[in-house]
Length: 234
Image (cartoon, rainbow, N blue to C red; front, side):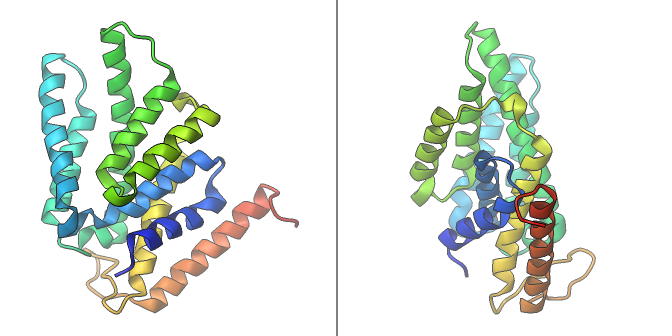
C-alpha cells in the first residue's frame, strides 16, 4: 500500500497543471486523502465526522438554519462506515460522488460560519472564514501526523496571500478534489491487489495497464491546459 506521503505528493503534483493559484492545491491534498477514510486505521476520523454532523444538526435545528454541511458530514461518514477498504470509495463513481459531496460540505460550512457571525454580530474577514473552513475540512481527512503542518502552511499562505472565498472558482476546486482523488487511485492501481475501478458497472480488476492509461490521459490533459494558457511555448 502506498504511503500517505506518497499519496499527498502525487495529488499535489497531478493537480499542479490545472491549478490557477497555489491555494487550490489544498483542495487536491484533501482529495488525495479522501479515499482512504474507508480504512480501519481512519475510523477515528470518520467518527469525528459523524459526531460533528450530529451535533451540528442539533445546533442548526434550534437556530432554524440550513443544515446542509451537517447532513453531508453524516452522509459521508455513513459511506465510509459501510464501504470496505478499496471498495466503493476507490472506484470512479465513488471518487466523483465523494468529490461533489465534500465540496458541498465545504460550501455548507462557509455558509454556516457567515450566518453564525451574523447572529453574534461579528464582522469577520472572508479570509478567516475560509481558513477556519479549510482547517476543519483538513481535520477530517488529513493524516494526524501531518495535520499540524497542513494547518500552519494553510494559515501562513492565507496570511501572505489573503484570499476571499467569493473569488474562488468552485468548479476548479471540485476539479482539484477529483484530480487529487484520482491520483490516489492511480497509485493504488500499481499495487498487486489493483482496484475494481468500474463498480457497480463492472467487477473486473484493474491493474498497472489502467494506471498507465490514466497517466496518459492526465499527461495529455496537462499539456493541453499548459499550451492553451500559454505556459508552454507553442
